[in-house]
Length: 384
Image 1 (cartoon, rainbow, N blue to C red):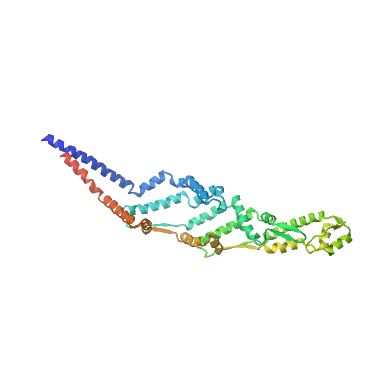
Image 2: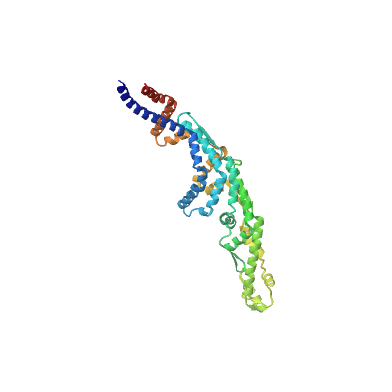
């Protein structure tokens, strides 16, 4: 009968091998896919947190610029490296790693059914304290300086000036000449200092330290210096016009003054009369004219409030701004309810399937020790 017992061992051995390999595979999966440590190790081994900044983000910014077209005030390609640097300083790889691993540690036990809830809290308030100086450092770039000068500061100053200003006595100062005078008295260092103040005020507003934005940038001193330069330019133009007038005798000059329309130059200048005497004869005060026709239209300060911020963002994004402020001030807490809501977007069937999988994984993990009894019993039978 020994040959019969040996024949019976053959199917038992085959069944043992199949079940043993299956239980071994389940045990291996339980030690990897069912363990949060496995995912942490894989992410670290792939150097994922540095890959995000070194490879993924530059490509993502290129695609974002292509999708936006020419609507962006500053081309992303011009400041792409600086944007990546700002984000990396604000959310460094070690911070990303810490937040990701904490999330994995909380979520995996829930997914495999070991826990019925989880809570992940992400604090962003301290990130703003790192973001502000990083943005200030990048803002020293020429592209951002030009944008600030053209679109913000100079635009606020030149809003009421117009394309050109016609001063008395046929002298015209263009908007470009006024802008040039402004930029000469507002050097990059001045703009950088004002920008730092604005960014830190906005940072306090986003963190919830203040309930409103009320930024006032004094321009009175810069305005005075710009008007001095414009006055010099206007005086130079008037001198050129004076030198271009033909000479005449005093009688013809006096006759020309009698019929001279207000704000016009005579057809000639008397021989021997210098430029200053010419201005006195016509009662020309270049500085006064510049101050009245240009200076009175230029503001003494630039004011920026939260109302302007909301207006610039548009009505659709105003609510998003409030949500961002609340998120930064109070942080963000993610629970199993948020995960279930995201899954239920696909319908109740998806949520039910998720629950069934969770319970199935939990049962397998709970009774995994019992599964090993099957190949052990088979081994005993084979031995007998």
